[in-house]
Image (cartoon, rainbow, N blue to C red; front, side):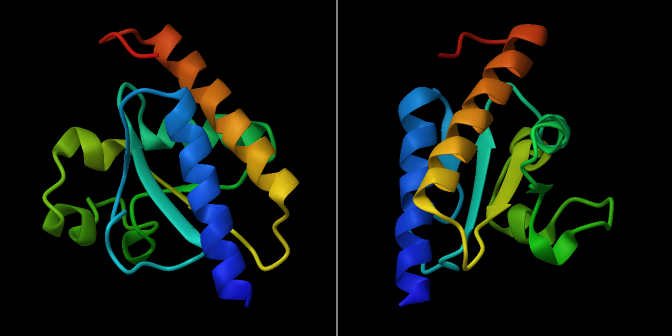
Length: 129
């Protein structure tokens, strides 16, 4: 039951983010994946910058894949998935907990959207929504 609830929350989080931001790619979206983990790239921002911005508002995230966390090297999983160097640099991983609420999902999605928009304004490259 918890797994199904977390998968629904993960999917809701991703839907909210994609509805508000252009050029968001959900990694492994069509694969059988962990119900509590969302991995994505957001064009125009780096994962590292997003982690710092989100941390400042109380949302813990990470870059890359869990198996390469802290290594400082590109994730072999993301490389094997065929991601470009830019996408690998932009990869962001968000995990849900067993006690994550629907309100938490809404708040985290809104915060992620705000942070991404701020970062895009600070370093304009391409046109994004």
